[in-house]
Length: 540
Image 1 (cartoon, rainbow, N blue to C red):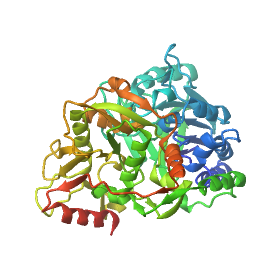
Image 2: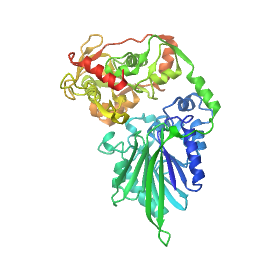
Image 3: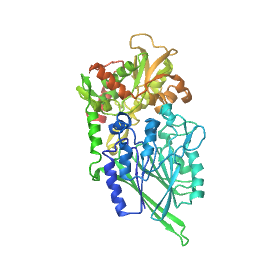
Image 4: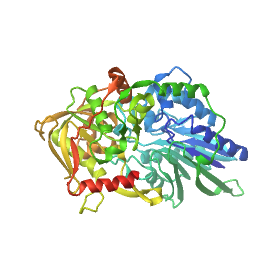
């Protein structure tokens, strides 16, 4: 039998899923009674097609569930970005999917019972398969409470230890599969005293009973065998994102004379979907509607904006986001913003809705939060520790790089760029020759007023950050996670991109300007090092 697994499609249902459908159709022709198709969540957010049918035309047939139904998925789990769309959106998706959406550790806050189906049984090629769905418990670190009001997220190891014996006793399956929206390595995500963001390896190594774990969330194309408590090597496999690769797992079982399974052979590989010819174009009316939406004019921007500039100092791209956030939050004295798409470009002239997706990729709200000056400083220290190397000489890198791109042929950023938060409203320097925790020196407010460590400031930031995403507010600024909601003074009702579009439309023309409010030092090392690292990252 064969599993075909996607995850983190992020709304690319009109371009990626027709290829997946072709792969599924070929597999089912080869193995008519032997294929199970799974998805690991994060499908409802990340592409204009999803946003359009989530919020712009929510009365039309829901394109995400319709496309997934056409592929022929057997089962899915829900992801954190699905929950971030809000209960009305993700509950509609679940209702309209022609297959179950699992979530054994998503519990009703009052009853403690799962609100989604915990597991399902599928029989393929005479093999009885149990599939248990779990999601990362770190949702409250990223997602506004109003999106998951009334829910609680149980730690994954705890949930797996509870459900595996139940499944074994009730169902007596031949195979138990984990379908997880969680990354592989705990060290690569949020860790608290109660849970980790990425628990796949933890579950596989601490919970007996699994034969295979299909996962997503960390956008890694990865295969690993993890030793279980019983001494079994459990295949854990994830497919990266946006349908670029599909996990194909083939399972062979051997039975004794009584029909009991005595051996399982589980092998996995990644299918490059660029080599797969898609089925005929899907949903032409939907494509036309989304294209028309993307081509809507917004307003004129008087200069070309390059997101890559944000890695090397004050940039017009990020400063435009700061300006728009200040416009949305007039009381804010400081603004935080980070690059979200790595290398987006917005050309000078009339902009369209499509350009606003380049400017701001995610559906975050805007929070106005109360932070002390010292918390602002500590927040920025963590940001630049993730961003900036500690230089010991003029020939060192100024950015924190790692051999991660192009098979190690060139250097890439060691950490996620969406955690590289820069500030506006204050003037400061970042000394790359200083050790971590001592790089940032805040000189003053931008208007020349003194910056005070003990004073409370109103800070504009996105909801991902304000809920604890990236741990800059918690591990960086030192604010306890449970205290963050009380720091929120106000929040927008809708996402930032929506308001950015409205502001630019109202103004008609935007003239971005460089604030020049922060820079890297020391002056004798930084300019040359920045030029070298820019060439490494962008070959220019």
